[in-house]
Image (cartoon, rainbow, N blue to C red; front, side):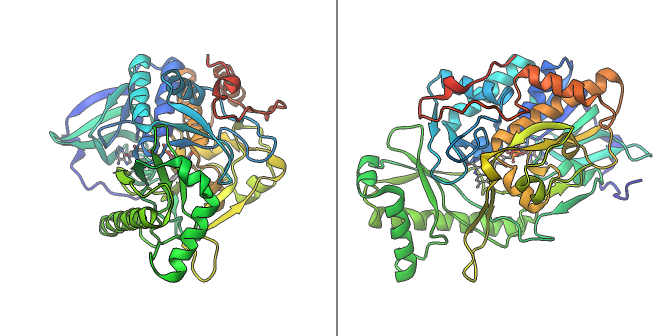
Length: 465
Ligand SMILES: Cc1cc2nc3c(=O)[nH]c(=O)nc-3n(C[C@H](O)[C@H](O)[C@H](O)COP(=O)(O)OP(=O)(O)OC[C@H]3O[C@@H](n4cnc5c(N)ncnc54)[C@H](O)[C@@H]3O)c2cc1C
């Protein structure tokens, strides 16, 4: 029996829709969940998002999918299915290149994020997913026995309710689980939470001049010098800059804001302001100190400051650091991850700013289905940033190759549970695994090495069925 009491008179709130599967939050995980549920035959799938566009972090602040390829000298492609379909659509309009493995996380799939918004629009329309934007989840209505029955949203016209048979929480912050009284760990409770980052994009960069002057190594030295001399008090000496999918443009992961609680609006106000302040400090530094940037400008800040972790739901299983570093195998494996533990920290008292730990042998570990099912729940799944993992395991298994893969798992799982009339823990897992394989998902590390040249996407892609 859950303890959380509702703050709203929910019974009086009008019902907007009754659906089979309700997906809350349209980031990379939620989108793949909704698409997979429709492909698996669910009639009424609704996807609700608080902002005015789809994609979550994938379009709010980033431009590179990591996690498709294992890092190291012998990369393997360990992600497939709907994530491939997304990249194929970007590739079809020339909005993709493979980005070399320069920052340790393996080859990235670089894309044009504005195009990606358009791709997500197209895929959801084609698949018949009912999408609702500009609607924020504010409450969950539960039965007397504690089972979720409806989700309450707020839009400009007021409150409305959506009743559903199955619920998928892909809000990143586990808002649905929080409101439904489902248990979780909040980042920062046990280990320091990962830092926040406002990403920014610059145009008019002369990348040839930048590379001729020493590129990444030169930038690192200049950043260290700027901090040491005090000329530009940058927050990090190891910020990253990379070429975008647009001529003369770069994108960054350089800003670092630590010690703020992303679930507290007052602290988030401070974090957003601090993120913008740091971004323009970097602009000053780059224009003055870095060859190729003399005539450059910031042309875009991320839609909001990037949040790496907040609530991690207590699942039927919790993925651990040991699972990642011992290359764990599970019978209920539903996706693979070969990405390193990449922990962005405050970097105080001589600590490295980013702590790395690699999966041995360039291998990939199994992620079990149970990490996507909240403890003691039968009609709720989680996927993406709020899945069940410890701080360290989450720092490995949070790239978008994996969050999209988690999405396709829970979409199919919800469909199976409806079809078989059973709960999340009772579905036939081998059937789920077969359906994932049929879709093109990768559940065993392939022997064949991946192709990682800039134009090599098509050589790697699997068939999406
Ligand atoms: C700064 C930063 C850099 C990163 N760099 C990379 C990288 O280069 N490559 C990579 O692969 N991964 C990277 N990651 C990790 C990765 O991007 C995320 O883990 C992943 O995108 C999370 O996807 P998600 O779908 O779980 O959540 P999100 O993308 O956060 O999606 C959640 C969605 O839910 C919506 N939402 C939230 N609350 C509500 C609510 N109450 N009501 C309605 N809607 C709601 C949000 O608006 C959002 O659209 C980075 C993360 C950060 C923060």
